[in-house]
Image (tube, rainbow, N blue to C red; front, side, top):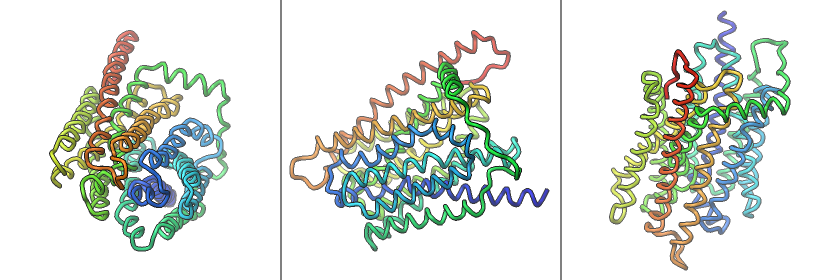
Length: 425
């Protein structure tokens, strides 16, 4: 047994390292947005297309990646994903044309989409079922270390060595993760195991339709929608320009705040998971609490006359850090409201919610910044950032209404089915 456990731990560690690298690649644009705007000579709306392209590909690939994973296994998808992200960073390192830069972010999004789900499959095959929930939570938490690497260290390298050396280094880190996967990762403990054939198109359509018809799945989707976008958009693109151009932070101080955001996420993820496990009948209360707290702190920041105090911006970063763990509650709804054979389909549906909201906000912030920036100004004023981030309230209002709607629908469905052990919402 000891021999079996050691390779399982090693394989998991390497797979998680690949996920850390994926989060690093995903986050690398967030702290380089100001430099990217200068390098490619683009306005805020055009800069937003970089992140939108990356996130849109990630969201669109969720279901296809699940089918590919069933056929080809985790090792091949981790290798393919790492290779795509390395290629994307190499192209981004040398690109001076906007179209080439967008293509580079598309490659990063494609590779990123293959990584997390592949690691979860490794967990399912290599560890006992009773340890799966803990390891899934641990995987998501450890992965955020990639965002730490994508903040202060990348900014320091960018400003000391320049654009091309910084992103070539990022590509080198990704190549290292790829080699580790190639050497160490195996799909299952069984040497003779081969991946199952992918389900046919009719089966895929039926599972997706059944998952969508379940109100609990849509409750998960809107939970993911309403909780994820504010923190994600702040970390992935607009937080750094807001802090540097709007609030007057130095690049290093702004990157430090984004690092603090990641550290708090690491700390509060298990707390949110514990609350949901301890109080399963009140998961929606946790969702509304996180959403209301985020909206309230943003209101203070946006209404503050002049630049906000550093303490208030720290509070903003802390509350935004809870957004990611809060969005995971959506996946818990997918798990509890769907049978095992369609959890993959339900999870894919849920995962689209937050990324669609993030794409909408990224685009909206970019457009409003351009409209609210005076002609001839080199950077947006603080007032432009205020109007841009105020768009969030439309998304929060719409998402909160939908969460209430589908929470009630899920409860009515359960009552109609007369489930002897009701699933809490």
